[in-house]
Image (tube, rainbow, N blue to C red; front, side):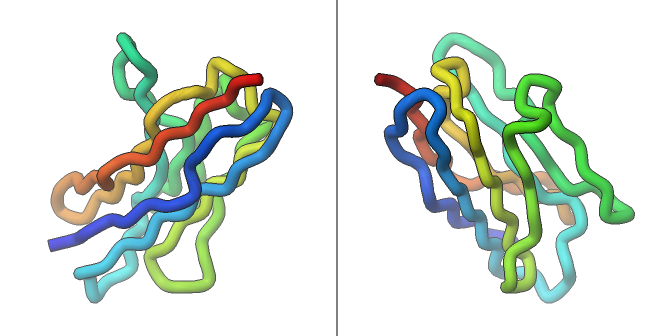
Length: 114
């Protein structure tokens, strides 16, 4: 059973930066498909950025050039560096991992507001 623990959300002004971290435990294998989704009030959950099989990445068009996903120093850790944040980035951000089934973190709130 994989468990995901997220950290790093908070309140930031427009144009600011935040760094989210997600650590997966409970797997003895490298989790190849791992990344971040977000859900704003009244909207569906959407992909933000993720690693896919083969080491590639997917980004939502709305975050390209502003957000960067990377692997952490610890196995099965992913980092989401978010720069030039906008009010429309406000959402609950969820870490996701796929290993035979989907796993979700508890979510961390990101609020971009002046």
